[in-house]
Length: 385
Image (cartoon, rainbow, N blue to C red; front, side, top):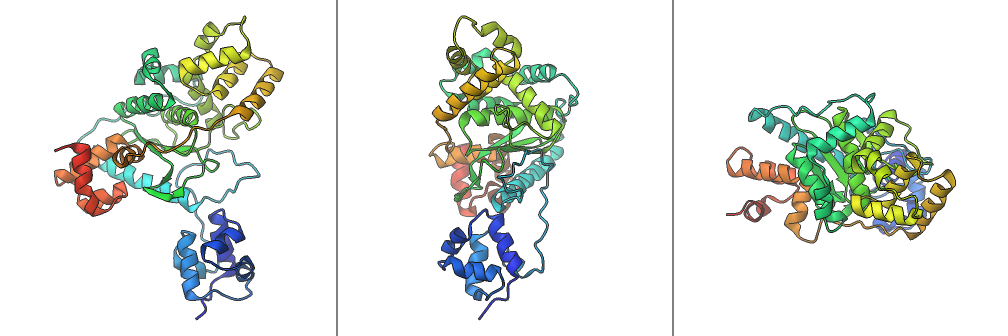
């Protein structure tokens, strides 16, 4: 029996998933020409094929019968710079991650209100008209981002973990995930977004795309903190080090400046930079000391007039050629990954609330994206006892 789907909706659902006709057809085991004809209104899939297609494209089955594609606006302001090569239509993976994070934030805010938590005074402390150096200095002081923190880290991952720990200690939830929930078959796309932030004095939350390079994740965390200090919520894809892709949004541009100054203050770069050494030695040295990418150091050096325009672009091309992207999950351990994906603070809070009867097992498992039957073992492993 044929399913009288709307051809336009088939195309919309496929494009929303960023799939070519050939890729979508392969998912339901049909010839690409057949799917192309369906999208043109030349024939229809069977109900079974339509249901499978909806499932594979992560779209409600009923959507395929709508007269027009539904409007799916982002629930947060969009700070991203979208290039002509990128799709402006949000993917279902991105939307699901956003909605999941908003659910967590809503629960945590109600919890904070229930225990009489005090508002965080650094949220919205500055406007975007403030000097980025002043904002960055306040971020470093508030979070105690010092030289000891950098020196004690053996690698970028350790530095990032300690950075996150200090951010959470200050009261900000940090979620770091490269997939939708715990579904490893739904990886997130770095080209679509690198992170987002929800500014709230009781329950601020930062999401970092874990598919990104570790050094890029460090910059994204600093970038989203800048938005919090300016009281801004939004979706970001910070690319501070590429001068050819400057942010179109002024808030995003300033957040980049604050993030860069937070990670590598201009005064310290000028002090450490050795004019008797070449660019490579200086950049390698600063990247090692400050646990940031060479790209960020290069841009900082340019902004502080330590390298010329030609030197910048020549070295930038060299870095692109040698780049080895160190991405990856938060580790092979399920429980460690669970904590990183849901924020250490949030995970412990919801598990304790469940143990004390202040949250149901169903609610806790749903918020952590795990099965109800898995919750007891998760509580034992993470809370102990």
